[in-house]
Length: 215
Image (tube, rainbow, N blue to C red; front, side, top):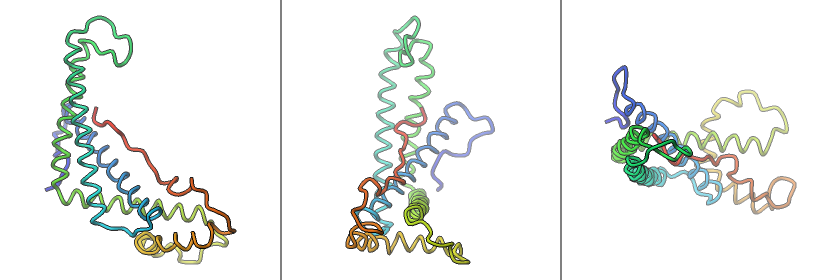
């Protein structure tokens, strides 16, 4: 079974659109968070890619995001109940009034629907595996770009360099990176001697993820 919002009619309702868009954001945040975890393991802990570890991380992130959506629904329910008794003109963007009740109800329903979607996603092995694969590919790209940026080219790349580049990056992340980090430390830092800048590691790959979606 393919997880995610089901096929919608040609003119989806506002709730369906909100859930579709929210789930796309959630999936993207899962990929980014998992890719960053893969990179941290490789660069900081010097561990190769482990599909089982990555799978467990994705499921834990799904649980965390589910709780986040539940809390969002609870918060909006409290706000909506207070808003029923609020009249007059809003003083700021979070000063909700009676006219905002329908919008608040839609946001609350969106959070609840996303909780259900996340529940299905967590039970769907194919969905979790697809997130792991996408995260691993993103990690290869990020690590490869970072290594090239730091080292630079002493000369033009050899003819045919692009052939097999993806396979070489996979080997770098899965096998060689931990050993490379150890040798890097033994030699006293980057080429030319001296300690490495502690702010460099992972700086180019950390990406934020949204904390509230579908609202």
